[in-house]
Image (tube, rainbow, N blue to C red):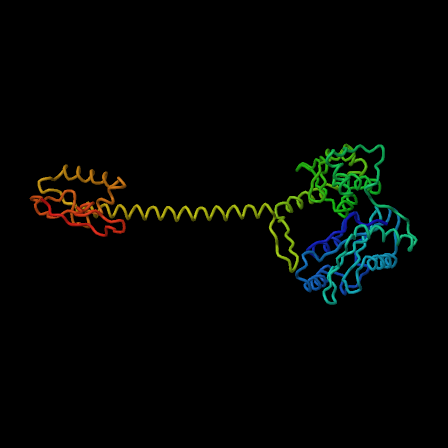
Length: 425
């Protein structure tokens, strides 16, 4: 017996329940619930019960747990045998009796298998099933239960699985080889090649092959034209899509259609449906963001760098705007003072028209000289201007001398404290 290569976890119970209970042409009988610990056995009833358990832990992003167990081709078990095996399997995997779960049987030519759908949230206290290293544990538990229940011992795909000598596959690049050696697990390309090789040895029709790929976490994307001409598959795993040519000639459509007994009338409707669902999913899919309860959501270093740069740019812009405003205010003040000074400066009555304009321009030019500003301020304080007419200079009676006339020389301890007014002659 084999389980899925990678156990799936998801956000919605509706999708997996509807998929497990959906009838298909390659099934010998319609899928039904044969066991578990749930009250209902219809899709709507199961979804309602599962959602009720998930509501106990709204902080859990992915409460869905899904795996399948498959017998070798040609073997079968009764419903009671399946339920006994599945109960032992779930108990050893770490699920309690209060974790909701159901078992759905699928019966087809490739062999019987069951889908196990469970809630990771315990009904008692909302305890969460963590399932650390569950994929390795699942493989070990299945091999032990095969001996206990006296079933045929099987071995699923593994990194050490070597393909048949007749298989023609693409070799790994140097970087991929180093990655496998460094991480100790197969790359997505190796996983796809090993899994497809194994499935081709146990499946001989398109529907069961496609279903088995989905159970192993592989999404087959058919390249089929609107005319119905099938050109081959591309295979997506872990978010990476590989064309058949990237995997090797053994996975080309020319080889697959003979091994899987391709029948256009039977298989093309499924191919069109797969292609449509893949295109719809790529248009409506959104990146998932999972935040653990009680922990702050941290941005990536790239996002933080962009945010810091944006803040710095904003601050620089604000500083430049403030400096510009201050400069404009200063210039406006200086212009106002200059206009006020010019208004207070009266030209002689005989000068009008162009002379007035000419003198105004001269004054504007003079005001642009830095040291003249202090000079004009001094003239304003004394009530004088450069163009102020006086009848004579006789009205100036005294001047201030920089050095007073001293009758006697100053002693060593004397200091001159004020200036002396000297009569103007």
